[in-house]
Image (tube, rainbow, N blue to C red; front, top):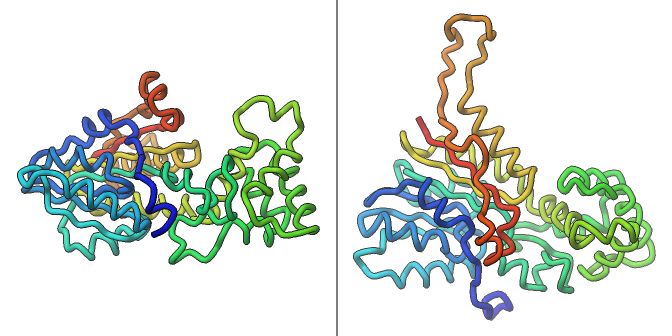
Length: 322
């Protein structure tokens, strides 16, 4: 049994009441949890769509799927919808939904980012607080690129671009230079080794504020290894296609890059007209496909952040298919 399988799946669902309100699901409807995890959100959704509904959960982690199956399977028959748990990445949404033969979907939920259990499992290499191999792959079975390969083979310019673009790290260039110099002596193979290099690269005065000095670089490497931004775009585009009229798409993101992608995509499908602004009527015929329901993102309350510090940076955006 794997290290991860020995752990209790402890993920606390973020913005749960807000998600349930905006998903707006009714009995017998179809719901897709694009990031199933331990089914924290789905367990509550299941009780709203009931035994006549369909719940499709997508995750690329076998342990998450097993934990979700146990949790959802514990529901009484009258509250348990038809379950379809699919091992896949939500970036392959078309493939996942075609595999379960569903005609359309009434609500999607995306809870973007790495799960608490993955962060807390040192052997996965996601954490800058625990030593482990520099891996960071969300799906080791399909993805061959690891964080170790990135830090040991990418040149300084590419490392700088990744760290700066994916994390807004102001010391990106200096960190990249220190990584290149360090690996000339020996390959960087563990998270602790990389943390030491990052700490050495960032001046002491800058390390005193803004949280752990390695947080941003680890985030950037994780995004690069898993192609997370491209996956998010393809998953959202597919969800918009599959959503039934009136269907909701709820997305929880945890950093500005993700939130910007969600915001821009929702707006692009809500404002499709390409006519010059001085035309009295639309001539291009590009009618809106979505209505954006959240002018500003919904964020956690202070009480929720106190209960679950990992919710601190969460932002929820919601759109409805027209």
